[in-house]
Each structure stands twice: as C-alpha cells, then as structure tokens.
Image 1 (cartoon, rainbow, N blue to C red):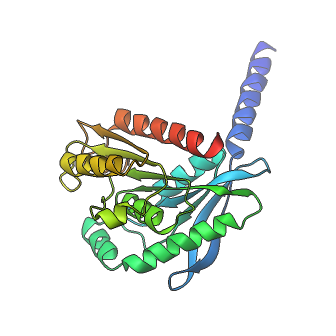
Image 2: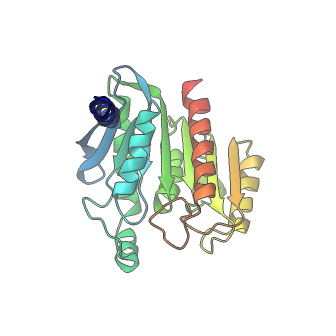
Length: 252
C-alpha cells in the first residue's frame, strides 16, 4: 500500500513537472516587409495576453540559430514581445568560414532595412507598446543593434554584446537611445581601446551609455556553443545587466 502511494506521488510530481514545462511563450514564424522583399522572423510572445514592450533580437554571424531562438524565448518569459530577425533568409551554419562569407555577403543597407521592418512590425502589433521597443544583438548582431539605433530614432534602448562600434562622430550623433554594452577584455576584434574610445565619444555627446568589459573573456563569451571561449559567470552577469537595463528603460 505504501509503495502504491509512493508510486502515485512520483507520478503526480512527474505530471506537475510536465505541466510546468508545457507552459511558456507562444512562438511562431512571422513575415514582414524588409529591405528586399519579405523578411522572416522568429516571434516569441508572453503566455498571458496583454500589452508588452518589444525587443528586436539580432543574431550572430552564424544565422538564426537555436541558441538565439532560446534567448528570444527567455525575453518573452520576462514580459517582452521579442522578434528575432532572419537576416540570412534561412541560412544557418556552424562553420566559421561559411559564417564569415555569409556576413560578408550581407548588404549593410538591406540588413538595416530588415531591422527597421522588424521595428515597424512590432510597433503595429496590438500587444506591443509601440513607444517601448529596444534592440539586442550579439557579435555581428551587436553591431547591427547600434546600426538600428542610428537609423531608427524611435528606438527606446539598445543592447550591444561585443559588436562592432561606430567611430564617425556623425554616426555616433545619430544614436539617441540609451546603450548597454558588454565586451570581452581579451577580444582581438573589438578591443578594450575601441570600447573606451566609444564610451569617451558618447560621453562627450552626453549620451546614456553603460559599458562593462569582462577582463577574462574574449569574443562571443556569452554563447555556450563557443566551446573554448564561453564564460558562464560572465555570461550570467551580462544577462543580468541586460534584463535590468531593459526593465529600467522599457518598463518603468
């Protein structure tokens, strides 16, 4: 009798666990006008109906990977309507050489237009607060997060994770959204000197910038698929900073 009761209790716990895991954001692939025809994106919406801030999510040079989709889901869990834009039109790779070619083959003006299209798509949804939309990207996507801030004055916040930094004062002058940046101190592509110069220039223009450099981290330290460069503690801290920043800029 006691064994039967224990078995039922275990089954009940398993069932409860299944129910918890079954809940979560509603996801779908959506389409919207972009820089050259129709663009696709991975959309994640909070489970509970309502109006929420929006986030344009921008992938690394690998393309719209499962990891980026997972980060998009996490944003929806936190109360954001998150849209990850497919800048490569369906192409995804884990080969660095192919990723490099895909990035080189992406016209910058088309990518910016695609991101503006994503912003416009979110701003017209009934479940999105149209004046509370941010951008968030990593690596190539981090640079494009800043590009969107330069080309979309309605952007409410911008998160850049180890992305290329503009240096032209006329470009920097077009960034009005508050910026959060997370960078690796060992990054050979976007060096600490580059980051300090960006911070100094933005401070000189009285822009809102919050930068952190992780001394023991290199490029792409937030992505767990980066087997040699992933830094779990730094990645966790960068995500905590990102969540606090988005909450401050989009929810208060």
